[in-house]
Length: 609
Image (cartoon, rainbow, N blue to C red; front, side):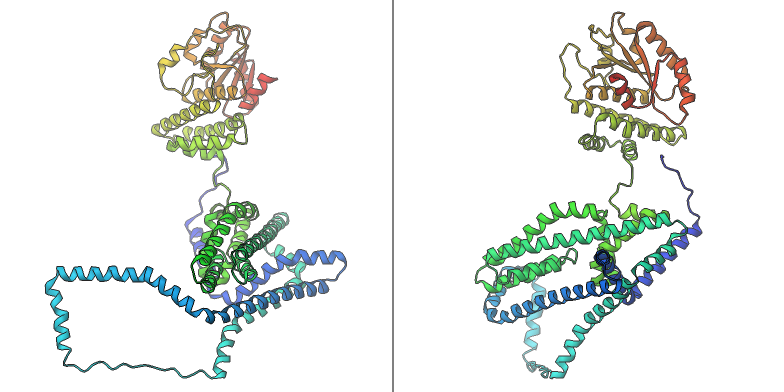
């Protein structure tokens, strides 16, 4: 592999990590009453800290800036809660006026759903009773015996009317926990903001371990991502709320502004918030209209807005702001909601984002970035190598097409193909690649070379004939072109030393030349004798893994080319780079080469330079 391999941890260390993870989960679950207000206050502090910094820049003191910011936050949240609460109470209070309409719709739904289901169940019971006559007698006999028993007495339990004190106590029990939580968060937030810089320095000192730069970079990365995420989420939710309010207003639903604001607020709850608002709005639409049109329009409005936002706006905004994979967002929502309930669901994305940042900057937690981040776990070369090992040629072709959308083929050859060949050579030298895997790799790459040819839309039946003689396993095709009856124009020749790897490298080089509009032909080593004496070939490229490892074959090939093309420049392309260039260059030159290159980019530069 390309990276440095680390020895596996001993079993005792792995067991200690598992025990530590289990203890951490227990602390998160049983300490949620303490941790939730602190985490909420920390996230709020990170969100409004830039505003306080701006006020400090304007000349306000720390205490004044914190007091003003917290006051504005309290007023904004309180005003929003009062407005939404009063509107909700007003709308709920008007529902009894539409009780008859709601009842008719519920009855209609019952007939269309449960009513039909009950009819099917009753029909099935009758069929079973007809098929089992012996069992059908038992209910009749039981009913006949029941004639002598007294009829059942109907009992009705009436609950006493609640007293005013009991009503007040129930309301307090319902409202007090959120108010208590909000008060604790507000108090913790104030103290965090008052001592913000000092707390930040203490955190850096605590977790730095002597590496101040890396810790500062990690904290800056986390705060930057969180700020971008919160801003993006706020912008998207406001956009969704505005679209819903406008659409419902056009549709004629009463309280459209309230439903838009409720949608914007509810959407801070991942996945289910938007549908809670949609369900409440749909219920109101069903109550306000006698028919089904307004109700259906409301559902369609929420569906359309959510699909458009989720497909077009959120991936562009959230993808750049969080760096989380979609699957990790879903899993984190399930995990944190199970640990911390509804508050954990709301905080799931920011908390997971912090874990990804920690995995990026702390080597021991690197697995978190691999599992939860949106970065590819394998490099392009490693992915190519893995797909080739499994013989997944279709995935190789898809990767090629994706790469060529933004970059040229020569970069694909250098960054992906050659890098993957180097990875394969390391495994092959250690006898870790089987013969079957080697054959699958060769077949997959040959299919990829054919895809390169189709991608270029090669010109055929020209004066040069077919410019690509690669990507086919038909030997007769090679033999039919083994003589290069070339015209006087310049044509580049590409050859190899024989064998699967150098053959593939040479054919990829041919594809690279054609993608650069360079006339080139491929000729295998065994057919070099077919070169005519009057062929005007100024450059010949010879693909080779390592000149010092194939000195004999390279010397023979270069000598043959020198006899037949005495005026041509012979260029050897070396694939493996694990040996120093100072050691490799004399070997290639001594074998008769004029130039030694290491990449397809150098080959193109040689032709153009």
